Amino acid sequence: MAESALDNVATVHVEKKASKLAAFAKFRELGLLIFIILLCIFVQTRNSSFLTIGNLTDMITNTAILSILALGMMLVIITRGIDLSIGSTLALSGMIVAQTVSVYQGLHPIVAILIGIGIGLVCGVTIGFFVSKIGVLPIIATLAMMNIFRGLTFTVSNGQWVSSYQMPDSFVSIATSKILGINTLVFIAIVIYIIGFYFVNHTRTGRQIYAVGSNPESAKVSGINQTKILLMVYSIMGGLAGLSGVLWVAKFASAQGDTAAGYELTVIAACILGGVSIAGGSGKISGVILGAILLGILNNSLPLMNVSPFWQMAIQGSIILFAVILNALVKRGVERNNLLRRKI
Image (cartoon, rainbow, N blue to C red; front, side, top):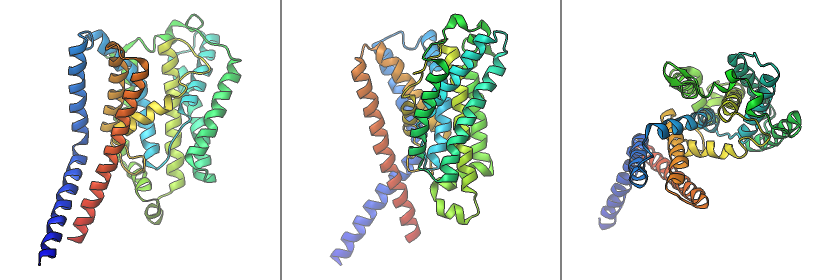
């Protein structure tokens, strides 16, 4: 009797712990939002210039490109993949477009954007082919293509930069112009997220992406074409990276061979902070947006507080590590909660 009572107490304790973690999973984005608000208040107390209109506008603009890339990376990670080549794809797209507009000064900015997206799509389809058709592990395929795309960037540029004075004002103005009173970069990011939200939550293909990441075997038995899904998500990622290359070059008014080197790690970090499971199968667009915003705030606020660049990296790394641990605990809690429900 005594042992039975102890077992019941232990079971109740496990159930409560699992239920709490499962409940936290439902409101994770709210918790992240509260953390961002508290962080903003703290930074403002340390530097009154943080919440000024000028600084906030600059911060949001800087975060726009990161958020666009994070959306594509979310889709890739949900399918249990990874893309380490996006920084190189961005650089290659940006370099070719910069060279093109420097020669054809009258080229319309929309045409330049389409060229960049096209280059990114070619890169993404290439990676998707190796991953979906050949069966190469995503980390191996994208690591190899990262170096190939970066090498192509240096090859087409001959190691030379394309500077702002070589680009037409109409192209550079992509980053400074406004649409409906909103900065063009931010407007493009908003449009992409609206499309992405509808695609993920209200289309059959969007649900299939989650199914492939949650349980590939079950998805295969259900008749889902995994080859098509994998090829599609890497193509989307490539297209968004190509678009980001054009926006990056327009914003910084220069194209270099080492543009966005290592930026893929920042994009992955934004996804992890936003609650996207590196094991695949779970992730929300709202979380990815908040993850990108949090990184944008950290990149902007730490220099304002005169934090050493070395400590900036350590602080960001610590926050990412905390997010990974929290994601693992939440996932374990959800799994335990589901298991207990099945037993009941």
